[in-house]
Length: 612
Image 1 (cartoon, rainbow, N blue to C red):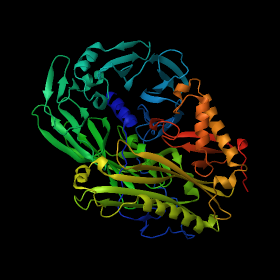
Image 2: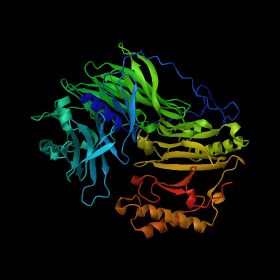
Image 3: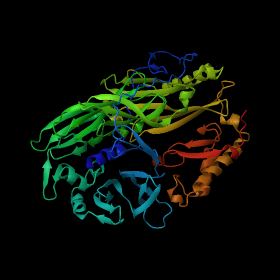
Image 4: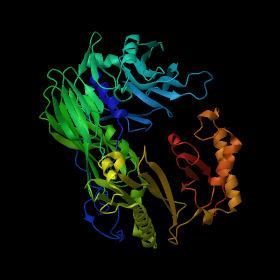
């Protein structure tokens, strides 16, 4: 049960890094044929082809008497329970505005910020029964991090103000919060890097490995509640992945592709062995195996995620399963973290051909994957697959001086089926033109010429490479004859982080023309500015405590003025649905980067638009 909990926690918390693509190519819709071209194919044959359903090759078995396994995709507010034989138990809702901590059967533990509470506490821990749809408050805390459920308790760390942490736990039955004073004291003496490596509670590590790791600025130590012993980990070790009674697994700092080296440090003889030189992240520890993934990028925009494992006793390695994502799925960042091993195989989310679905790979007694099958209903289905296809173009360049990669760019574009509009070619040419314009503005040069010799010092690292990615969020037809195309993007040109952005395009299928807000809005720009500013002010006032609103200011009048100045008819990124429109305020535009996108929805009943 302990190993199941570790696997589940890792699956929920693992973060993904996107890798780039190479070479300029265009992807044909049925994913079987790749063609090089200057413009997208838009013939009548260019229609989405539903792949043939493979026969179910799983052996016929009796209903499982094993406990069902919970599966959660990213921040989705549904949990799907499956039996280890791949059969579905059921799908249940999870409370919104919550962050998962862990599961105990059909009980979900989560925490949420309670912005309506009058005291100093800012976080509330709950339990939720997915069968009865009832929740129960466990306790309130000032602030916690690295929360995990283990052995009837919710464990968490709190900063003590001097750079170190203290450990606490909350009993899920009584709600009593207790400080683990022994661990808090030792953490106070060895404080460095716990924000990277202290992912599980000390009790779990003592149960599983017999010790916990401690750090100072220069060394790593093992502590077994009695003694502290220094370890000679590799000098380039950046992060601790996992440890047990024989080994410590660490990785180096990742390069520009998000890959690094995974090492195994032998505690007994202090030797170091390389496990993987293309390691990108740990996914689970289950049944005495540590699972990690490595990505492989195809020239057509498809990415394959190979999941490998190492036996923690014999140190033998092998491949578990290969996952994939294809162009047109904007949520593949969290797909790889869905990987969940069980007694009979593997569960994971597959992103391809316009949908995200749970899959199950049955593994035979000899260790061979016998079949791969979809289970339950799709997690998400994109509307674009009903009306068209997605193609991708990518490019990269290398430094003319040092030969290392310095730029990578990836662009997707939607292709409307030709039988949906007599002007499909015009629309597709416009969308492809936008793609080419983006690549011209941000596209890689080959070779890259460094401005000076010192610039090469950063090449080969994350900060030494520029990247631009523009992916399709979705495309759909609204109001009978309007096509809306929504895009997501991320651009990195150096610094601590890149810049996410969105884009929206609207076309009239009856004319083939792009439709702007100035074409739709039945009023003056002054009226538009006043309407938008009023809606933004109303959003701020909807918060009982404005301090928790995502804006720069808590003053409604000041926010109104800011929104008024930003509200230009054809410059705001506006997306369209069947019954409302929405405005995406980009990071830094109305609030800090940490606030992300601030989205304001406006019903068509509240704005006068002249739809034909």
